[in-house]
Image (cartoon, rainbow, N blue to C red; front, side):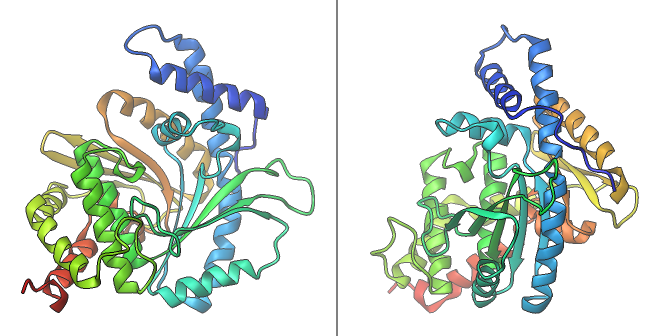
Length: 358
């Protein structure tokens, strides 16, 4: 398999990020198209190069999971251009060449004990790669309600490699934590706000923070900041009432039913999938294009073309690897508007004895 190698210096990559952010902030005209396109080409190459270290880490992850949770979900992705630009804008001092999560690898295990075991397994493994950052949002949830464990590694082999120094993010989470994140992204897509980045209507941001604290009660883990003083009963009751007031079930079910039959090209099982979520009024559609393992370069080119087209259409585009279309749906359900697991958990909360209003 051939992987792209970095063709530009770190300074050139940083400058490309600055150009793309500046262009994104212009209102209407004034964009130097040639300069913007040159920066986009640099970003495309830089992002594509992260495919190699991700592939290496994925093999290690799957090996560990065979002993811990054979039913775990594993998926990898290269960060979408809009998400990259938004992060450069949102975080002061962020530098494209130093961004830690352009390449991402995710493991979703069934239970909290399995998550703790997997986390400890990585902590005890000696790599040539260096662990540069660690964020335990399970023991210390974000105010938004986000809960997951992030491990940031800097790639390094014993021999010199063109990929040395590239960083990737390994996300470890439970199915319950994954269900919450899926619902946040799905609702954010249709509200046209990045709820996962704490942007959007307060009533929705507050609702998802509350639900995450309810889920934390279920997993007997630290509660979301702002909800520590709410008992389990109060948290469950408020979750039930707010879900009914906002019409959460109706909205999420409507979003899911809006997806037509998924057209696919190529084989049912492939190495990479280009997923395009197209939103048109009250309707939506998911298009998947599959690529064989030796077609990564072609996949990256199609990814870039689809992103450029999405600038005008408003579609969401991502290139991922998840083993098969079925596992792709399970690992990235937000791209298929699948919030079934989240709604199932909401039902459990609503039926719980703790939700009964006395």
